[in-house]
Image: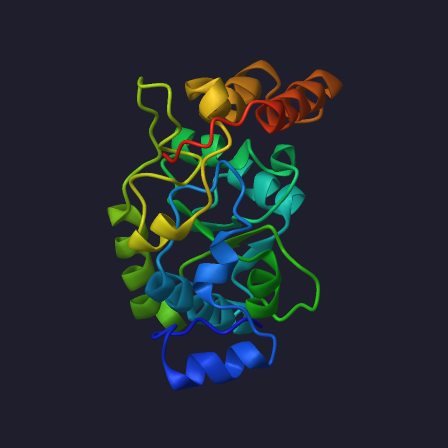
Length: 227
């Protein structure tokens, strides 16, 4: 599991980097366009610890199908999504479902680390942590910080400042690469939400084609501007 380091420039961080372990900053490079709101380094660590405690009490839901099933059944909890999951059509409808049901959700940088926190050797793109008396204090602390995160939004200036993760998030995002969705403006950020409205089941082939077109388009039109 990738270690989240408190001092990326310290001697311990440099020693571990030599061993091939990635820092929080390095993980941010792999974020997909919709990974907002994004947990800070500190909150990410807290969420991993809470997930580990929830696994011992069997209070987690794991994977898109299982999580979606129990959201529809009315279960409550914190939705933790991996921000490096691609293609985004795999789970882009889940944040919309959370907002419709007032469920808190947050992205973390790595699906590999998320799976490891749940005790699995396989990457996991989404986990829902349910409250339990054995770790209620840790859960409430995570819940408070997740709810305090700024919601994803889109400006009208033609630059992507919400779901692409370039604006309104933690300071670490200043190190992200230039936004590749400038050419599409707000459309790139709002497309997952629109497609969920059109195809609520998330299985339509038209949805797959539209999302693929959105992902491919910016590659040919890169203005090089930073968000």
